Length: 302
Length: 302
Image 1 (tube, chains in turn cyan, yellow):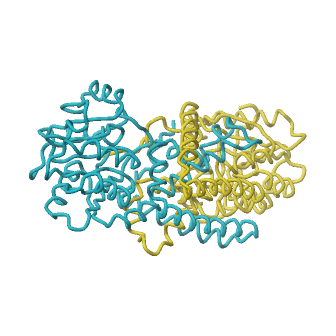
Image 2 (cartoon, chains in turn red, yellow; image 1 turned 30 degrees about the horizontal axis):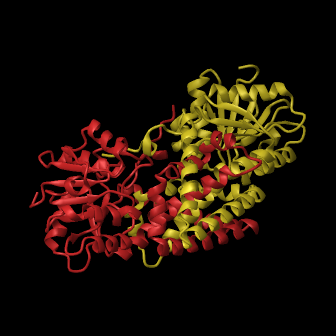
Image 3 (cartoon, one colour; image 1 turned 180 degrees about the vertical axis):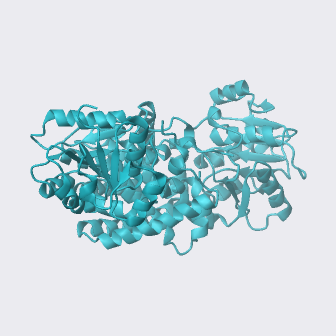
């Protein structure tokens, strides 16, 4: 690709290891050097042969990279950026995969003054974590949102875009604060609600945990997938995107109170109207290739 | 099977048509007569060859049945029971598939005094509706909960159990009010929350509908599947199980407020503790065969 052929991945969990695998598949001539702060993860990455090279020192891992991607929880971005700072060459593009962007832009620019920082967020993932959970096709047909700071050289945005496109992603560019509001509703609020309801169901006295699990096919099990996501990652997202999450949560709570009132007072028409409206959203998501077209997510029924 | 070989299905939507298909597969010697209040659905059922016979009159459909299963929205149970009353033979088991049971027990017993009423709830379904959405394996390895009224002949409970087991379901027997509290948390509350968040996301001013759909893979799309469920069915469930739903909703709202406070005040430990706890619930559901063991529900990533 145009000027970027050597990559460094800092953090080799689900996303970092998926990028490494995708590069091996889609850009097989581009060497990847990797680093993870956890020695056990580095060992696993070596065993899985995820990268051309796994370094013991983050600054060494980035030394000859044209593109560095930080794949750590957003609360660890500042520390990761400081750790690579001694090794980063001038002109190297520093990017990341964090789920909130305003706080990450600030953290990366503060830690790496004078460097090319272009934060990014591939909107993709599964409920699993760690280097063994990654796979090469994770980013195919998913969106990757770039949030370049004002004044970023468009040529570098084009280079980073070409990288993600090579991995199968589609690119969108937006301002960090708009990203954070969009993702607050499409990702952060859903996770918060899923974590909450799984907690609520676990704390009941008269309905046992065993009953909750047995009868989860009635809808509850859908929420448990999201609520099995990485706790550190999600703690950091909520703290890193606090304002937008609290605002969306407030709107959700108001809407939930309105439904609560409709149920209490037997207003069936209000319920029916909302439930009819929400069907169309699903249809659009499937039509636009953002979910499996098969019913029930393609779950097996055997 | 022991004494019940002729079935009548009243209501030929997702569940009714799945039962008809499952009987054709699993009990091929047992004839099914069917009826639906909608003439278009009756025509479709004839075209799909769902039943041995589709009647134009509900009382005629049940006339020679050993087991009648009412597969209509819970708010329509009383009317459906009154409609079949002129044709039901003494000794015929009357059952249903409704998602709440206390209100259904009452409706069926009032409409069919002196008859054998054993309500049931197969905890299975998809987001689709109508006679074309059904399939024969829908009930395999799912639970079917029977809620026999006090004084029900155990032999009839055994007959109804054998029927559902023949379709691949596992049987549990419980009191109607306990059923309604268990399902309020494992099914009704999840649906209510999913409908709410999809509504909230649709009503934002500064985040467009198009953005919500594009970036839905971050978690939101999981909720849209449930929120695409049949509006009439779900309106009736919330009105038919009002007390239990409102109680679970109150608990959920309290827990959500606690998380909101933890985010506002930066209490990362509280978030991390909850998010770690909820992981185990997912693991148990998968271990007990109540969800697809593949990551991301087995969605394709190509």
